[in-house]
Length: 296
Image (cartoon, rainbow, N blue to C red; front, side, top):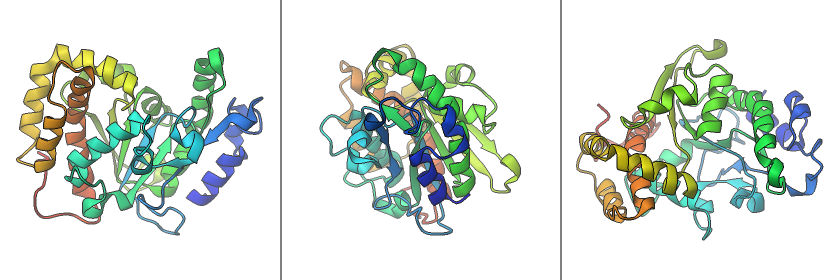
C-alpha cells in the first residue's frame, strides 16, 4: 500500500488494526476530541509525490494534547513556533546542532527535505483523563502494523525512535532485536543503534537509532537525573564525537548552565543526536563536503 493510502485510511480508522484501537475515530466515544497528525510536506519530504525518497524518519508518541491536536501537522519547524511546545523546540535545537549544522535554520543543507515525521500511535485523545495510560497501551499495540506499513511504503535509510513507545513498536514489528528495558542501559555511550537488512523481504538496509523523547518532563526529570550520574562519560563522548563545528559550540553555550535541569537533559540528548546526525548526513541525498561531524 502506498503512503498516501496508508495515511488516509489510518486517519479515517479504516485499516484492519483500527478496529481494536480505543482512539480510532470509528471506535472512540470521544470522536470529536481525537487528534491525527501528518508529516509536513513544506519542510519535510513531499510524501504525496509518487516514488518520494526518504532519508530519515522520526517516530515519536501520539498527537493527543499537543500542537498537532490543533493543527493536524507533524513538523518540528512549525510546532516549535508554539510557545508551549517544548518537545518541538528541543527537538529542533538538536536537529540544528547535529544535522543542519546551523543553529539559525533547520533547513540548511537540505537534509530536512528528505525527512518524515510520524507517531507510534496515529491518533490521540487528550480527554481520556485517568484512562489515558491504559488507552495509550492498547492504541500503540493496535498501531504497530500501521507504523510498519509506513516504513514499508517509504523505506527510510535512517529511523529515529524517540521514547519508549516508539521503541516498543519497532521491537514488536521485528525491526530491532532488543526491547526498551534492554537497550536503555547503554544510553550513556550514545544513542542505541541497530543495522537492519532484508526486513520483511525488503532489500534496502535501514539504520535504526533509539533515544529518549524530547518532552519537557523527560528532559527536565529523567535525563537531568541521568546526566548528573553520568556527566563525565557524557561530556567525554560529546568531546570525542564533535569536531570543531560552530552549531555544536552554539548549542553547548545555550545549554551551559549546569544548575538548570533542562540544560543537563539537553546535553544528555546531544550525545545521542551526535550519533544520529552523523548518520543522517552520511546517508543524505545531498551530502555536504565541508564542516562535517566526525562519524567515526
